[in-house]
Image (cartoon, rainbow, N blue to C red; front, side):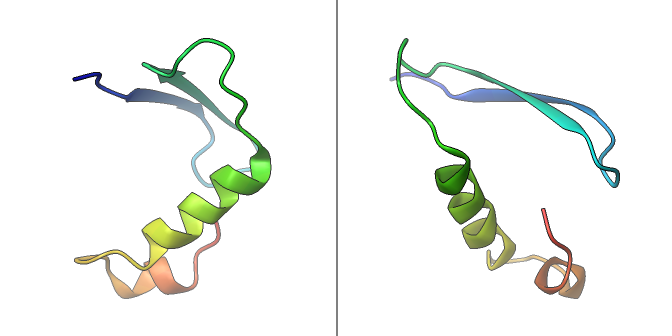
Length: 57
């Protein structure tokens, strides 16, 4: 089983954030729309505090 690992750097509450994804197959296209959709789903996840409903990623 492959493990997907992500590393972040930058300004968590600022205009710039860098993400490095490890474990994706080489050449797999990932669009900003797909990332935005997944971040939206995460915001609705179990155990999230009320801030998650109004903070934008």
